[in-house]
Amino acid sequence: MLDKIKLNKEKINRFDFNKQIEKKDYQMAAAIAALDTTNNIQLSYFNNKENLTRNDHILRLYALLQGLFVSIDSLYALAYALTNSKSFININNNPDLRNLKYIRNDVVGHPSNRVIGEDALAYCILDNDSITVESFKYYIYSQDEIKQEIIDVNAILESYYNESNALLDELYKIAISNQNSTSLEEAIEKVLDDYNHQLDYESSLLAFIKLYKEIYLDSNKSQHRVLWRFDLIDLLHSYRPCNSDEADVINYCIGLEIGKIYQLINKATYKIDFNKATPKYISAFYRFLNKNKHLVESLNYLKGTENPLFYSTLKKLKREAAKKNSLDAANYLEMIMAAYQGKNYDLAYSLALPIKEYKKNK
Image (cartoon, rainbow, N blue to C red; front, top):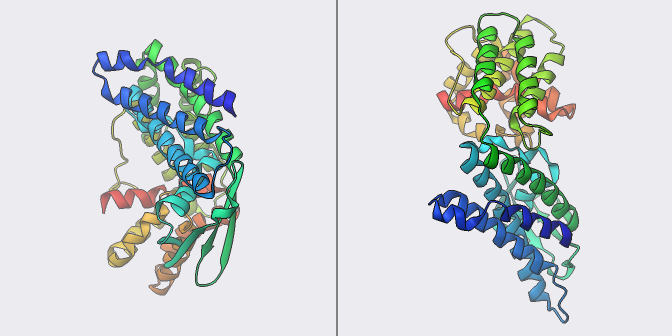
């Protein structure tokens, strides 16, 4: 692990903190400094001093978890400084790092006030005696159960440094090459135009992705959200609709994903005209929300499938829609729930995009 931490420090140093200060690029400088500081925390964590007390272990663990949390935030900040978009990277695609924020909040952030189940509070207690350099455990207490979590520190750090080192390589390429993005902008605009005019957008999309990979060699969806969005479109294409209403939802979600890619490339906002050809299921869901404003707040739990309340919120909304006889809204929610139950979480996320659009335009 020490070798990976030292390699990470070398990759960070390539961005030259002093040069960023001279240029007054304080955003870059702050991100570089924070990453360097958190690396020092990780190095200190593995410094095998003798006669450490239980209190020493607790302090070191707190520093480690908070440092990793800051590290991820700083990687996003560095990406934003170079690309003007935090969406360039997609660390949440790594399950270990996606769960890190929940572990940090359980142990360090809000242990005495956590929401785990639907409308239920939970309380997290760290087992101080369990803390070693390699692992620790804590308990989540709720009204219905006591759950034990055993955390492998090395697994978390391994995931972080694999992702971080690969991402820093990608960002450094951008920093030194300043790629001309005009051709990409033109390519994605053609995809969007073909989609809006019901032309062969699939061919133009494949041409766009080919060009993107030629510019960003060795790219993968962990570091490139564009490629992740392309994979989501592939998942939507593979969906087998049961009727024309489901087919309309799929086509609509594909349009939203293309719009998201357009935003990533052009660093500009784009949205589909929601007054034109909004699918029947989605229109019904919007009307249902308009008539039941007290449910809108629960949409906050549907921003990502990793949220512990994602599925239970869908169930609650579907139950309420059925009570109000809004069957088309319930059918739309069922599409998302079925994908989630089948553990196709990326598909569930993409099918839920229209819900996020309502949140923005309510």
